[in-house]
Length: 170
Image 1: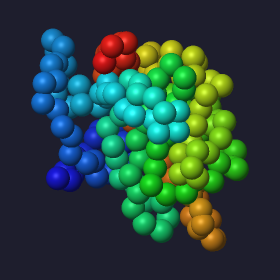
Image 2 (image 1 turned 180 degrees about the horizontal axis):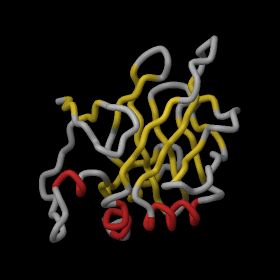
Image 3 (image 1 turned 120 degrees about the vertical axis):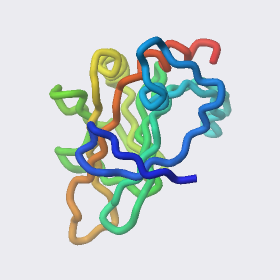
Image 4 (image 1 turned 90 degrees about the vertical axis):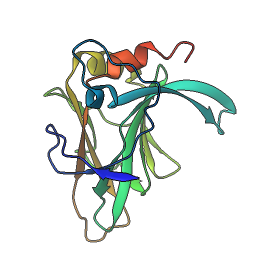
């Protein structure tokens, strides 16, 4: 089920996919929407042939210049992966992640052409995500000729610290 939600910190209105939230408990003073921004979940990584726990953001849908694509963040102690359904072009100086008004963090590489990987800056990203309020992700997609420009999505970091703390033994 797809639900349209206005998220006040987004630069653009996005369509967020529905979430399975059974069994989620909320901290005192925390709204259900804040708790759903991030979840700790166990995933199977077929490329590393292992199961591991990650903190995963709320999924969003953005326009990649040709069509709509889902975008979300997945983070563990090894690094951040920005996952999409469209091929990314990381060869531009404006592509990366920026926490609040901090410096732009550039991705290390593309993974399977559709995902931006940040491994060398993992420790910095984790500490910035814990201290920050929002993360702006800027990506360019290909093939889009002529270029459709930078596409951005803003992710709330409210709930990240709690989800990240649940990784051991999730």
